[in-house]
Length: 128
Length: 108
Image (tube, rainbow over all chains, first blue to last red):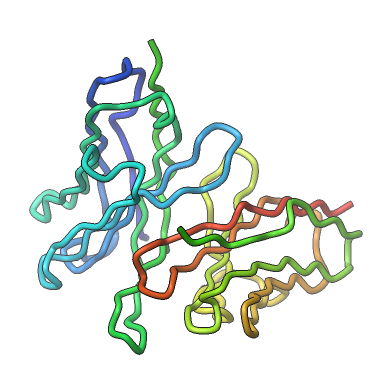
């Protein structure tokens, strides 16, 4: 059974940093593209970023609101995904979900990814 | 930036057909995905690549896409289908990944 377990959430002051982890099991993690999605309290879903598998280049992509502040990485030896969040703002307050990704290449050869299996999420609160 | 537009709410009686729409300019060329989120739970995919149903999702859930609109149809909606539903897709260059604003489905 595919399982994703996020951890590392908590309360942090504006300008602070936090690192989230996502422990994966039940599938070949090293072959998987992975995505982080967040949801602010009472709001909708927001795509945060994606990392490809190392065999596909291991490259990352980020949503505009977090680009330059957040970094996604992976440790395939530990089956773990990370989200390093720096320069946190109050608007980053949200539940952060780790997801596996499904993807396809369109006729222009762009890679289009989407979330598949979701973890239960971890809450991050940015407040003074 | 790119946007996907959904109605904020849809309401049906049990056994009726619920249709939730999602409009976006790039949908003629891009797949739509649909997620169900029940209160206090993580989202679950119910439709992927416009019309494919993941294993374990009831047959009453179906998806379609035509032009700039994708539609999630729940045929014979059940009380347990009450949830928020989000569509998801990408823009023409796959630079922007976007969720729709979500539709609250009420079945009563």
